[in-house]
Image 1 (cartoon, rainbow, N blue to C red):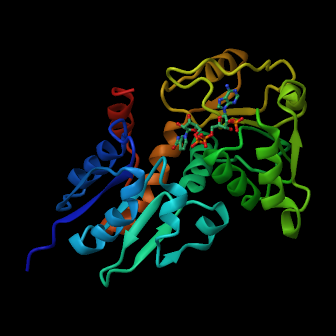
Image 2: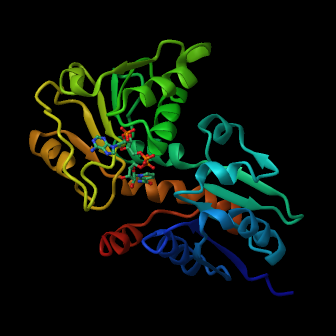
Image 3: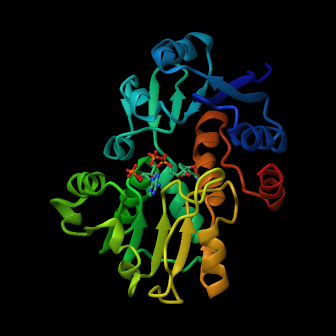
Length: 284
Ligand code: NAP
């Protein structure tokens, strides 16, 4: 009996820029798996029909990207507890009996990207500064807390969004008090004594202004990471590299979040090879 041909994809609007097809189709070819990964451009009003359609069509699953990460979660039969805490999903798995399962692997991808850059990295080394309080920040802050971070200094242009995140993640329970909100204007001083700086805003992304931040107070032992991967080296990472910091781009997060999804759909935990990395970099 021949193995079934499996289809997965990425659901978003717009979605044409996504690098996910390159990643998953590379792995399908590398591991000799019969299948394909495509783009599913789905307008906001069409999300429910599209997701139900996946079950009807026998599609094995999908990544979920902007603007559907929150709404798609509500359409799942089962949501992984971590994704529930994040309040959004980035991966749908359709089980063979047609159940829709939602996961969020963004935080896993981010933490893994730090460990790839420094296998000894620990969230407990010292204070962590996080810039931004949007979707990427939610996944990153929660994962850092789950890794044992004791002090996260959170700064966002709109302070209320940072405070809401603080309320949700560290008002009580084991992480009580671990997230501290600073005002956006305090971001330069807040770097004092930090062990990690993370940019989760869109500032520095292709087409956006550079992130404005003075790194003078940041200890040289601190790592500097950016969720952005277009460009691969943002102005922040360039400035940090010139000062001698270990820097981590958003590409590692993107590649690492794809691994558990591929495993869930196609049964193999794939490797991030230098060839794959180069292939994606060539398109950025
Ligand atoms: P989002 O939910 O729209 O959040 C955007 C963030 O940027 C908010 O905190 C926003 O602050 C801030 N921001 C926007 N304009 C700003 C400005 N002029 N000055 C200061 N802050 C500003 O977006 P997201 O989904 O979190 O994505 C954020 C970035 O992460 C994007 O560049 C995205 O490509 C990247 N990302 C990467 C990966 C990966 O796998 N590497 C995954 C997800 C996202 P306000 O709240 O004040 O508006």
